[in-house]
Image (tube, rainbow over the protein chains, first blue to last red):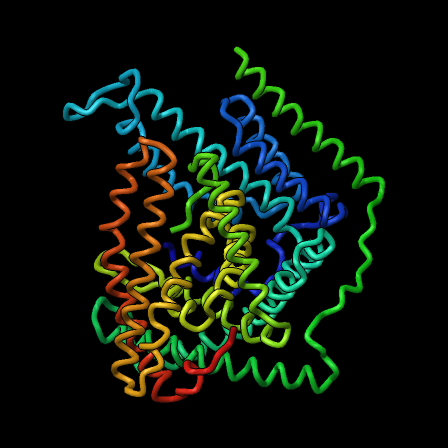
Length: 264
Length: 202
């Protein structure tokens, strides 16, 4: 995996993807979560090319609308597409069907190629919609939206706690890595590296758990009884209804296209 | 390790989703609000483990460490990994939304199995013996995970069988590496803070 991607992972602490404010930010978080979930459901279960391609176009449109940083968004998707490229190379040879061409006596089939392309389109469409609708809110907003959507309370709390601690622990990790680098430690393929990383990981666990105990004590001392309160009142406004209805109609269109394709 | 959306067939998706939901349910039952900070912290440590990239010959691999997480958390590994994977899908684009159930099952079920397999061994008084059990757990979790990933692909269609077969040998180096790293991690924890492993969290 490229170094820059690792970096972006290491410094994530629950903030939204970088983007300029757009009208998508004004839409209620719950509507966005539900819409992208339904979108994933419809697109992944589609069998035809037309609805999935339409879904992909819709995804591109939403990415454009949400004013995401195009370069960064594409970088994230491309990491996955390298994997898809391998799939596109393998599937034609393993799927029986009309031969497209033969290499070393192995026939590549059109069916295999179209199957691989279909998977690629679906995966990209779902990710892009998630980026534009859900990743444009911060992880804690997402947690609150999930809580309002009746996701189990403990799960939401776990998410909120995790988002809160990610940054803290990642700082700790970076500090320890820097200390190792200062002692001229270089990652290589040998037992010394694995042992050192194992020690690093074990130490990270110990420090984090001790930290969790301290945090937990401090929170209890201030009257924390094991749960956050969700104070924000989420309200569904006209814009949300409009967007939700419009999105639903689009999904119905995709479903209709699927049924139409099946009947033919 | 992350399977993407659109690759798996509907029965596999549904089975994975249902089994994961059961796992998450059991995990949530076993987890009190009292333990939330601890589980949250551990889940984020494992989130961070997945961006520690180690060189392996010419390429590089990232740690998964689900075996060690299982040893520490037991069934609570299910909700912890579900949340970690959800965040990774939404904010980083690893995997997919509908395959979340399958992906969670593939990583969390081995963790729970390792919890039961290594329960006794990891609590051994001798640090070396405990560390060897840690290594078995670390490597074992990777084996089970790769078998499960291969199975979920193979069950989704004939055309994936070749890819499924390729997954197993591809994971052998990762397995060895995780074994060594887990050995060192457990050894260190055992010498520095033995009560950390022997304590019950769930």
